[in-house]
Every structure is written in C-alpha cells, then in structure tokens.
Length: 79
Image 1 (spheres, helix red, strand yellow):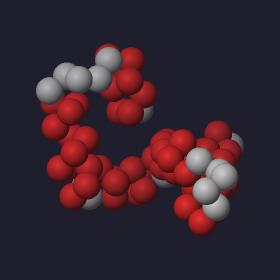
Image 2 (cartoon, one colour; image 1 turned 180 degrees about the vertical axis):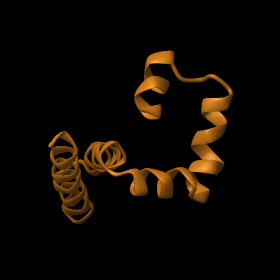
Image 3 (cartoon, one colour; image 1 turned 120 degrees about the vertical axis):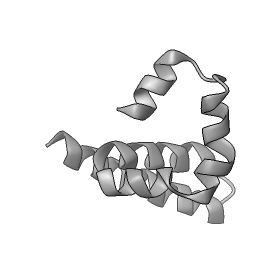
Image 4 (cartoon, one colour; image 1 turned 135 degrees about the vertical axis):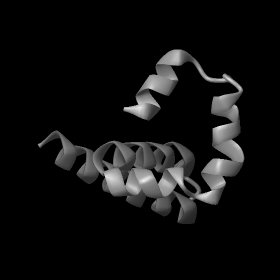
C-alpha cells in the first residue's frame, strides 16, 4: 500500500514539475526532485534505471563518494 502511495504522489509531483516548465509561476525544480525521489522509493525498476544513468554517474555518484552528503541523506537515498 505504501508503495502505491509513493508512486501516485511521485507521478503527481512530476506532472506539476512539467507544468512548471511551461508556466513560470510554478517552481519546477522542487516538484521534479520530489517526484523522482518518490518514484525511486516506490519502484525498484525506476530506481535501478536512475542509478545506472549517465547523469547520475557523472554528477551525483562523485559527490556521494567524496562524502559531501550527510549520513542521514545517504541513508534516505539507499533505502
């Protein structure tokens, strides 16, 4: 049940983020980031796809390996 709520909320946030790209009134970055986060929590396939993408490997993985994030943040990402 929790997984379904994550997926539904993630899709809603992604849609709001995409609307924010067209309308300058709505901020798109928080909605897109939240949507991706919730989709990663709700779907193992989506999480594996994001973690294997070039964008993740090029920018985010280096920061994580250099310990630029707090321990709590890393625990949230890995679960």
